Length: 383
Image (cartoon, rainbow, N blue to C red; front, side, top):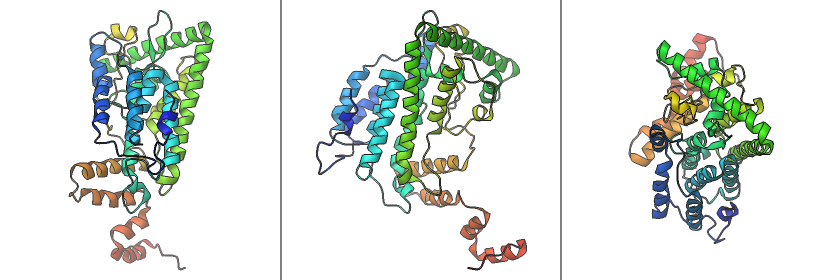
């Protein structure tokens, strides 16, 4: 299906139509996609399957296109990106990201969910930002789908998924850094051995594909490049609408996964030495999937994305991570407890995140700032 169907404007007087959040057809599509959630896929693996989901992606795309004629809604278009990824892998992901980028560029003023009146443009666009962050939802977003999507299928080695390729970018030592915390020595050793076996299988698959089907490998690399370019274009399209204090909206987890897949493809499946960029988990990052806990299933390529913390891991590494957490807190209370004072406090905290110490003192205790300056020997510059 051409993404132009989702860009077209049926009524120029209302270029984005209706809000689709409460449309029964929207909920019907969401309900059908429950079969592609992480828990559902893991149940398939536990039953001896590969995690591949038997859904009619083409039919779902047609239903989404029909619904899109009623309204231009980012929540639906993120689902469209999922459908395209499941139907066509990295090529579909590239199309889905391109669709989102074009929509943001052309229809920001009118698309749904609507902007709200707020003190800052980022707060006004919070619902849109959170809708787009569903791309990185490891349970029901593109990030989770890509981990289970078969990207290579060489004879005799079983399907190689996006999660397999991402994991293969990690050396044994780098993988150990991202392993679940609290494991005993024996458990960690077994996990690392399964990672090594997975790495060997991916290396063999990459070499076999490059030797026997070089055109397929070249096409996969091209599709990956297009997906990464689409993600960068989406971030660039959002920047003028949501960037504050030099903090933009970034899709770090998805970008990191695509980067790792690229590293594996370029290296022919051989893990690079550990580096800080690979060894540092980030907020909402889905760590590269270790092999299936059952060695027999790991051998045939049916490994679930273990080692991953659902929703939000407990580590925050940057100020942007802090702002993102606070955005989620604000969104939750606005949806579920609109009378709560907590979102107002969270907004104030969010405003303080990029401040330096003196700015924080001015914000929190302006009456004591003069005294502090005298004690600390820090004097305000006269203008």
